[in-house]
Amino acid sequence: MSVTKKRVLVTGGAGFLGSHLCERLLADGHDVLCVDNYFTGRKDNIAHLLPNPNFEALRHDVCFPLYVEVDEIYNLACPASPIHYQHDPVQTTKTSVSGAINMLGLAKRLRCKIFQASTSEVYGDPSVHPQTEDYRGNVNPIGPRACYDEGKRCAETLFFDYYRQHKLRIRVARIFNTYGPRMHPNDGRVVSNFIVQALKGEPITIYGDGSQTRAFCYVDDLIEGFVRLMAASDEVTGPINLGNPVENTVAQLAARIIDLSGSRSRIEYRPLPVDDPVQRCPDITRARNVLGWEPRVPLEIGLRHAIEFFDRLLSEGAEPAPALSPTV
Ligand SMILES: NC(=O)c1ccc[n+]([C@@H]2O[C@H](COP(=O)([O-])OP(=O)(O)OC[C@H]3O[C@@H](n4cnc5c(N)ncnc54)[C@H](O)[C@@H]3O)[C@@H](O)[C@H]2O)c1
Image (cartoon, rainbow, N blue to C red; front, side, top):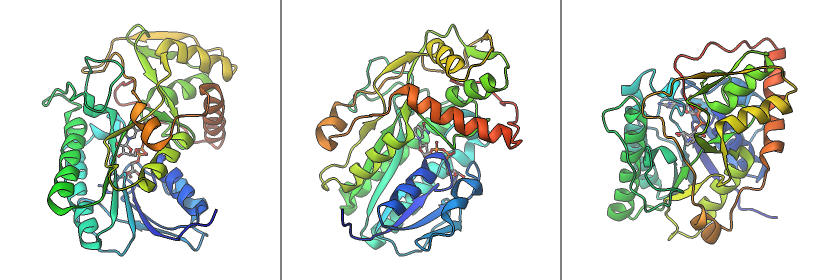
């Protein structure tokens, strides 16, 4: 397939999703500028891309304006797991809000398309299942998760105001739980937590009784959704849910991981953290109809890839630090 080579900016490009997106854009023949302050991202995630002449990495904090020349912007910069975003909540809100203002300002100057990595967290602890894009959410504005949830909600507001006020071409994706290689080993997210515990033969910690459900999307599927959304016609602004609608209970996930990793770990139950949603599942009808997109990688295959990655990481001696606070 022949593509028009574009200069693409990926903020948060050294993170989990960002590094996979950079990889995909390079494979599609584009020129990629990865911008990251390495708060949660790692140079190791992009080390293999550095020899590519179409790839460039720049250390920069999106809370400050950026002056570069590009044709498209994917704005992913933001810590994504509760442990990381609650570490410095004021900085988290600044990253979402000032980061959005700075990147939207850049897109306005360049008249280029801009994509926002929003989140299912904008739905908070939802009272409808599965969540459609017109559900307005149930977010606690003063809770410990608010710096992330409200920061992302405000970023969406800014995107739609730039769209209405400045006729900017925007794309807003609401991303649901995604997993795969290069997830942080110690960020307390359920898939990485369980895999690391299983590989180390430690007890698998389930917060709550394990009956809460989560729907997990493999990273390659998600990135395909990003690229399709960016390529869609300009009327497709989103918000559009991207995630896997197949639900699993957390207890089922633990059993699957124990089985696939051949582990002897047992399960330990702990109390649920504050504001933790009991159920979260995307309605992806809009993504199916508008983008012709749906996840293709079965959980078992995706988990095998993730287990391989963590197995390698642990065997290289990368000992994950203990989780600061629990989350699923
Ligand atoms: N992974 C998921 O399941 C998921 C779900 C919903 C939404 N998202 C969103 O997708 C995006 C990427 O998430 P991820 O899972 O790859 O997380 P990640 O933490 O691996 O990546 C975030 C990246 O942003 C960088 N960053 C943070 N603050 C920055 C700043 N001020 N300036 C520049 N760079 C900064 C980090 O160093 C990191 O490389 C985030 O915006 C997140 O909110 C992810």
